[in-house]
View 1 (cartoon, rainbow, N blue to C red):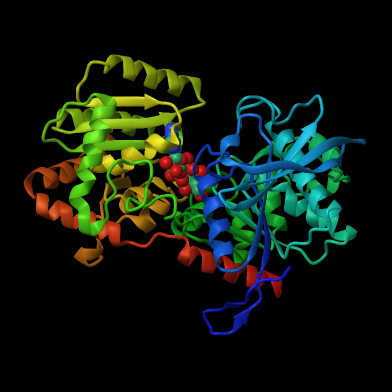
View 2: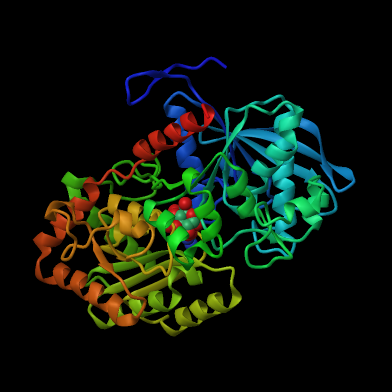
Length: 506
Ligand code: ADP
Ligand code: GLC
């Protein structure tokens, strides 16, 4: 492949890298959360820098086909070994906003990816074990030999294992693996049948503690542990979370494994794709604006109120955008809503939950607040609407119990929406308290609280709402500080290239 050369920070000319991303999501075609944004954003950045990137994804029936250009079958017959036989697959190719994507479609009665939803099935481990196996088989059969196979989250944890234990012996000995963990809570824990299915024989070997045996449930195998043990480099999505995963219960049982592999583990703060998330160019908002035209932001506030029938009073709007999951601090989201209403603010929520109890709970809340002119709950997934909320709100609340990185606070900063966050994970690395941070005043960009109780949240919200009402000029300075931050993929893009360079020459 002919590619332009790239200058390293050191001034040396670096050879372009050929990278294959393996993931269960990629924005905007398959998106549940931040994983999707990251897979798309990092791929775009790496390509801009002159590298070759391809993305391998499952072909789900429910993905957004309107976001794919030129979709066609590029390989009608890929036979993927599975248990004693093989499953017939077709591989499709298409461009997702310029990114080269391959979609694997199995034809079998298992019906792995045609279920009307991305996740939430009893055979989840098998579905993604199959995807990992199929992706490796696809690379093998098409003679694709990327320099780096970059795998994401538990879904693809078996790919580095398969490379080292099987595919290396079939001509893939020069491929290196980078494994990025976006969420330690979901690890892919399964029984021995996974070994038979994927062709990893020798259960006594894989059930070894140093290999794939789950650290807690000794009768089970752990995909994420496999990814950590077998990859050439492992990252998680912020430096603070890299520390938490090793030293606190946020590693969800993998702390010791990370400790053993500490010399190849680190945190790389995610970026935000400013091609997608930029109030100066955003096509989903009625009024575009930047740090020097901040007054135009308020046209979006009006539009947001119109959309949700909110009263047009002199009040700040506080928003929550995100999955409604225990991880996100459900009780604190609820408390933020009522605290806002009791203290002269309006509240807007956009979120959805696969958990029936949480979902019912928010539907109940929505009905209860139906007549409030100061509050709106939108329970569903709506990417376009999320842009209007980031642009129209004055503040955003992110009260997570744990948060490996968090993108919503970084997007909000770009849109001049002041984040109020709990001090955990990537939130610690990106939001600096206006009153208590030890950073210079012009670098402070939001409000931070520490504990998980209601009064901790209240203390931060009170300060934020108080500043909005009493010192509007100061509030505008805080907004401007946030908008000037550069949380693009520029820096993390270079960081990942350095990692690739490092593992390629090991
Ligand atoms: P996580 O990956 O844990 O869900 P992040 O903060 O990293 O959290 O990323 C969440 C991403 O998903 C953001 O781009 C956010 O705007 C988007 N998002 C979450 N829920 C919704 C929703 N209901 N509608 C639209 N976008 C959503
Ligand atoms: C995960 C995490 C979130 C992170 C995202 C992208 O789903 O929950 O904190 O920002 O992945 O890395």
